[in-house]
Amino acid sequence: MLDAASFFDLTDLSFKDVFADTNYVWEGLKNLKAYMDGAVYGPFDHESLENGVPLTQPLIFHEGRLQDAVDCTITYGDATKGKLLVERDGKELTGASVIMAGVVITGNRIQLGRGVLIESGALIKEPAIIGDQSEVRQGAYLRGYCLVGKRCVVGHTTEVKHSIFLNDAKAGHFAYLGDSILGGDANLGAGTKFANLRFLPGNIQVRTTNGLIDSGLRKFGAILGDRAQTGCNSVTNPGTMIGPDGILMPNTTATSGYHAGSTVIR
Image (cartoon, rainbow, N blue to C red; front, top):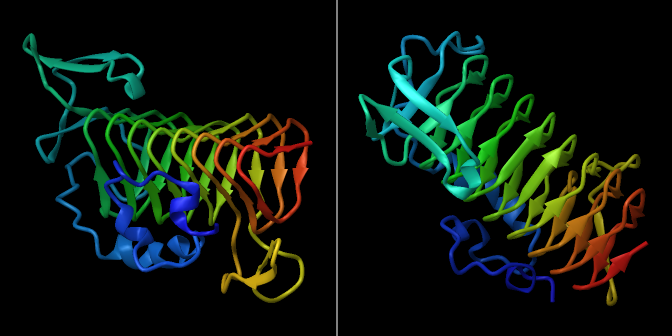
């Protein structure tokens, strides 16, 4: 009931190994640092890319390397639908990703998929893995150990820290995710906050129908199963888990613990 397969369809997930040898779904968070530290990061450097300094010109990432974009024509369509297009001399650069001017990146353990768009004003700290056709929108803050799948959205002024987005997960506006997991096609309403630290000391205890389970985690935000949704300005207490197709209504605070799939939390 509380394993990863109960929350997510892992079939098409390129990083399913982060959940390998786990009994409880939150143990993917325990594995996250080791998984990302062991990932292969290709060269991610360019003369105009300085550690912690905003880019003064756009760059593209194509065929495994960062390149100048000044001679490119860029169509800023919806990246999640494959409509981000880059052309050079009238020829499409298939799968090119775009990093707009004004982006700040610290470190070089950055892995970008194909067709990724990183908008001006985003700040990304290493390590970060961002999958194909995902968008990191203006003002987003990725604080390290962020594992983002395909066709995801890290939205405007959304802060993400030590968290996992499965394919098609979206946190489009003004959200905070710390030590959390969004399932496939999960969606956060604007202003959603996943609290991840109790006021009292000690590990977060997960409330279940069979009693409390020690998560082994001092910091643990929320886990949303596939297709789960939150309404605008909703909040989850530390250690909240919402099963597939669950709904957290707007302006509502979810109690910590397990909420079964398809539950509507009011």
